[in-house]
Image (cartoon, rainbow, N blue to C red):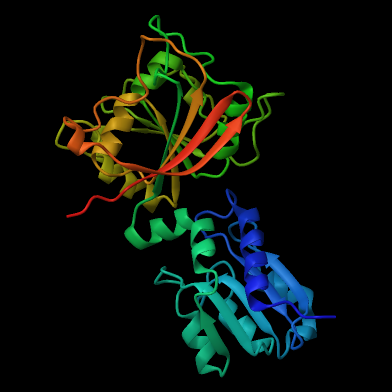
Length: 353
């Protein structure tokens, strides 16, 4: 039987890594495929949850003695430190693996160094195989670790003419159940859901991840964060219902920005210290505008309904743009139809200079 190429094995490792999205934070998602000396797959693994065995350890356990003289194909540089688990670099050396192929180096100074340890032990190390795919699959964690604050996704729902509610304030429901279920799936992949106090006062959202068909809560719930400069969140607000952890972020606790409101940079830094690597920004339009104006949004996911209102609140307010030359340019990376609605995913383009 013909063996599997390293490229094919890495593609599989990237697929495996994705299975850990939403459950591994503050750790990364990682996938590993072990090939024996003849190129046959003898072990597979992925990091399933924080504190659990790493992808390499799972794959080594499957392979047993067949790993000796083989190749480990892994999406992220094997860790080189002892935390809740031991160093994967040492485990690979002890298993007798002859070659390790790495897609992306580890930017975490606490855990990095695995490649150097492997080379020092005589293991052949190659890097950069399918790096783009591995990077994309782990983008939130990698971005957060490299710069020191979470990856921010702004999500909004609007009519085709950009309205988030009707003139009388009603907004249930602009989009279809299919789109709303997709939002709950998206919440399940992040560590925190952020909303402004205005949204809490107007809509009283739960901000939980749940199954809309039966109302059951997902096992893992993101931290609910209310950006509330003056502490106006009501005591009986649904974000205080105990269904998930909640942080009411005030100026008194976080600090004030130039506008006297909660300093958004300080807020994100504080979330990073809490182990938050990915944030879903859900509202409202003023808070979204402030995040965009500050250049703090990494990805935009918009759910657009085939409806027109012609009046009413818009999905975005004051993003610091006063003329067309200052417009925030986007790159569309995906357009998917969900029921009657469109889900549009876009990345803000970096401005020159």
